Length: 338
Image (cartoon, rainbow, N blue to C red; front, side, top):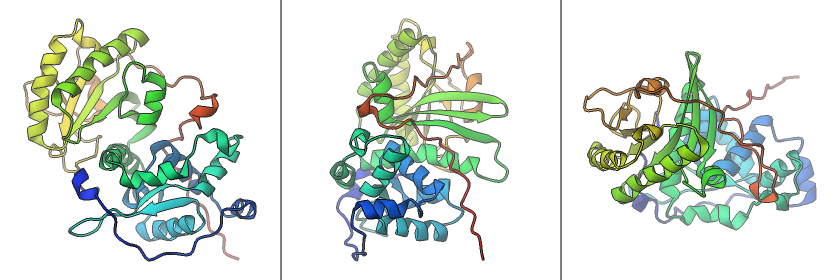
């Protein structure tokens, strides 16, 4: 179960760690890794390149059968220089380990994609520097909205699948001249697919500024001809209630509010604070207390949502890096005993 995202003020500083032996970054080591990295390892590297930083808890949820198996493999990937890790300080208890992509992992996925590592746009100092970023809590929380969906889709009785997950960086690359969402996702369940832009509010942004984004989303809808819901997550029910009033005013000010479908939720609206699939979404303008599941978003607006494939042509410029990885992990490696 994912806990409620921790306020950024509690992520300052770092707990000293006992140093672990690590290998040197050399051509020989990269060659050695070709026989030791599994499909899941390389997929995890692509996920970290796309989404920057993930906690060990999130990685367990969407990639491993259990925590012990995950810890053993993550330790190896750290020792091999494939991943780097850090653990933010916490006054009470401890945070899970946080992972970012390290040099050996970046080299592996670059060569796998037929790129020179320099073309990948990877910078080790920048990735490790995320440990000090004021956006760390926001990044982890927003990623949690999507990793819980992957976890849900991996359950034996799962009925839905996360088919697309774009980071804020990729969204900014394609739509940043108009608006920059915190993420873009697509969920398929019961033969129907819904897509959305995610806005993750950590309680630090002025609500007027958040509401001002609706004007940009309206411009994006007019430019692309695509109507896509905007789903906003808030840390508390009180924050959500305040935001809904401001958002409703902003929608009324638009020439065609129907072009910008908006729904909200809070960490207190469902059992799991971050599980987007639960019945937790309320349409702006809806005065009832009912909430709707992610798969049923299409029922919230009178006009049918126009679904389309948002993904443009694959990135080709050297600065764009890799195509987005599939949100679903490859099958676990099969152990063969002699």
